[in-house]
Image (cartoon, rainbow, N blue to C red; front, top):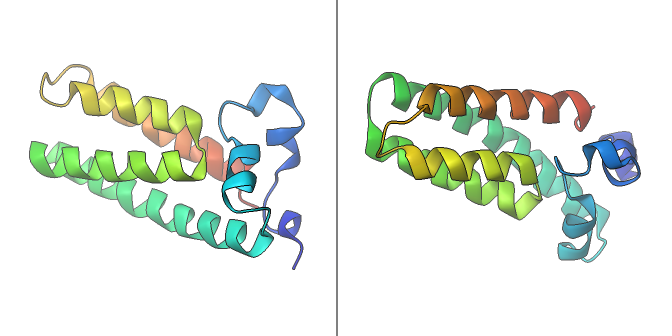
Amino acid sequence: MPINKYYNFTEFHENGKYISHFNFKALFKKMGGNETFIHDILDLGKKDLIESLSKIKTFYNENHKIELEVAVHRLRGTASAIGFTDLYNILTELENNINNNINLENYILNVENEITFLFTNLYK
């Protein structure tokens, strides 16, 4: 199964304007160029993005800071592993500000916008 059938990589690794959102070259290297592994990790990542965003919103709305911090940290690890660089950076800022309660709603909105961007531009 050709990997480009399921994902739109060309915009991310050939067109510089999207390169910061997704580091395909790093993921390709981590996976040893194995398209099956890349496909599997992107599918798992998609599922995790959806579930984690829902948890983050719920924990924020219910003021469960410890659970919020755990969910943000977990999603940050997923973003790092896959190469979602902008999402990773936003989550890092969110995680750093949870205890201070500074702009959390804005950071969560930025996380949601970045996930929407990834779904719109990466996943077919």
